[in-house]
Image (tube, rainbow, N blue to C red; front, top):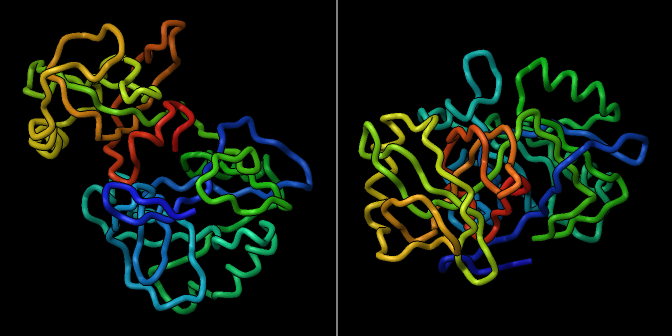
Length: 285
């Protein structure tokens, strides 16, 4: 599936649905990487939004790769903080976009490329047979979660499929910024929501925790450029400065209340690799 997003051409990757993880011989398991989802095609890294991402120099490969741009900390563990601090990313490939092949067949093609041997800045995400052992190892290493993928499934570009199941160790979701409020600092809290079919947002609450001075310096000028006079939210929302609903952020939270608000939300990061229309709250990512 090829789509045009914000004037750019994007190869839409296959998406996962949220857990719980299935078990049994019909499934393979991979760790969930904490980075930027990126398709590698024609010598370029493309995010889900169609935006070109900065990645390592890779040699030409005869396949369109699906994977994640990941930075690693001094202990050799994935770290999105290291990515934000400017650490050089590694491309972790976990699939090839070949819709006619099953998962197991695609893994054979991917392994046959020998990426780690031909490029030190690229590797292949390992695949495991034992789900509980994969979960235990991922927890011990402090990783984000685990993916289960049906071995006989085909690659479905642009589809959120039950053939891929993700299970995160904490509840996170991607939400769209609809405005902000000042507090002790000019950026005290973000007003966030999820898109509705008519282009407005369903209000999900405000998030102030996790907004650092560094985040404020990077984000506030962009928000000021997006100011609009009317609220983008479909219903009542806390007062603030409204913005065009174009920016996506990832938020950690404890639960969603019956009226759809997030409890104890914490800002994690801006997601320039995602589009507002992709966001379904907890199930987006």
